[in-house]
Amino acid sequence: MYKITKWCKIITDDNKDKIISITKEQQAQMPYVFRLLDDDDQIYAYGISSSDDDEEAFKPLDNHSNDYGVTDIQYFKWVIMYGIL
Image 1 (cartoon, rainbow, N blue to C red):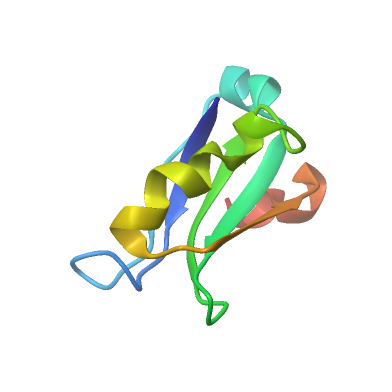
Image 2: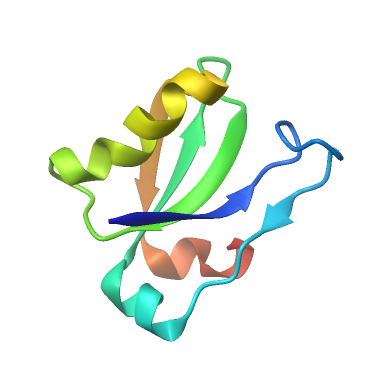
């Protein structure tokens, strides 16, 4: 399970970051933070996930690679990224 929490301005229609709020319940269920990047290391989105080390961890990349051309997913510890989500 995952949720995108921020679409970066590079892909939004109005060229502004889009922040999507999360609940405490979602935060508890999805403790892993990720970001999606293209092969030029341009960040397209941030999100949270219920896993960071199995097939489920790649769903954000699988679901958005065709639409946005993202080629990489990077996971971080929640405390590091919490301020920018």
